Image (cartoon, rainbow, N blue to C red; front, side, top):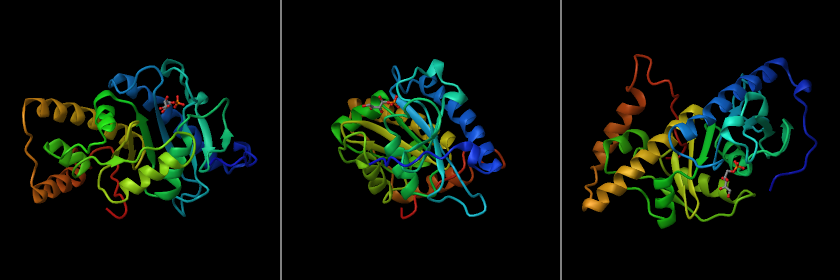
Length: 256
Ligand SMILES: O=C(CO)[C@@H](O)[C@@H](O)COP(=O)(O)O
């Protein structure tokens, strides 16, 4: 449940933190445009957030902030200044209007998973269809092994507005390499080392959900052997991309 603490003003924060918030506002505003671009949302049915580490020397912690969109605002109207800054209990620190209706879920993930720097939620058609069936997406494509390291798991049914969805996301992803979870009867949530990585996972999830669904319409799909999934995942996570590796930083889901 979001607590009604007194909002901290950005002006009272160290300059470095205020600068980091300003940078995150630009990044998160820009990444929201990727949701309609890749066909992941209708109307305003999706949101992106990014963690802002309060103490870069200490690293992620409970005093961090998150930047997320205002609830129900058209993606065409989102700007860096319209992004809303909250603490990790969902209390607004800076910004006008109400933060996304999923802010509690995003905040819970950041509190419980310090390695997570970005969270995305959409209702993308094929991933949401799998959510309605509460059926994990089997790992039958090398693209799935690359990005998800195995099947995409299903999380429990949970109502919006308190910690329920966040708790379901964390409980499910703590025992999976996947950066994506299909929340039953609702839709996908994805995580990443930053918001860009979480958006990428949402894009790749929808493509895999579509392809595996279509394959299933043609007949039985063929699972990939576990050792091959491991090999594909390790290569993609540590070798794929340019010499320095793909621009998306890597994420390890803690216990998985
Ligand atoms: O699923 C829901 C509402 O039930 C939300 O995720 C979706 O409408 C997006 O809401 P926001 O515009 O982020 O508040």
